[in-house]
Length: 352
Image (cartoon, rainbow, N blue to C red; front, side):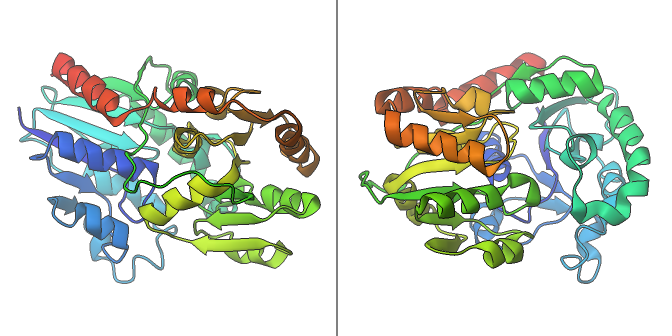
């Protein structure tokens, strides 16, 4: 069976890229088609430099990194111009337009969708404000290209419902996985709250900063993104921006935290599961994927409003009532890489 993989872009390292790396390891002969790749990112270089990568015409645009978001209208065209005529099976992994590829009628297309495009269907994103008039067309285009998919996989029940609501199709859930630890680090009581997130507006890291300041708790923030400047400007007290870190340091930060805090609406979110794998509690906004990853009152606490007072209340519950470390570990065990690999491989064989 001649197979290829398709991914939206390879410019940052996150949960979707971890899944892509694993898919590429499951199917080592499969080339990866993507709009652009940034090997200046050390994690992208480390994990994908030895892979066969096929990029679109966008890669040839001078200074494409500078105009990355402005090029959004060209991304659908970039994927439509790829030639998959030689493949029996194509697996797209996407939160945006990788599913818009065009294949022959006898080529099977499996789409592993973590969410339909958030900037179109979920929330107003100021980063794309200038493109708002174009979004009406993109929504129609997104629905049309969804019909090109033969089989749908969803990364969570939350994503499964959104795929059904937006595209009107059924999908099967295969949860992503928690990475095996690279270091044998023991838990310790560092006393700090921890955020691991791309610093985008919808992640609501600002709420965590304000809640930590109100409770006079130290906070460490791992990640980078367009909101970083604003977040620095409101951060007072014991707030540390750690930036991008190695997997080893990340594991140590998780091992020492008081709790991981997730204030945005996640499609699923691997970081809560990763924290639970260390026996650490999670404080999360009670919508989206957090309802699948956090057991309220056992592996952490959910707060019901995206306001500081609601988050503070959840943090105080943790302080007063504690949590169940054993339940955290048991929850994390449900999301092993071996389970993911087995489920995905079996599914591909059944569809091929």
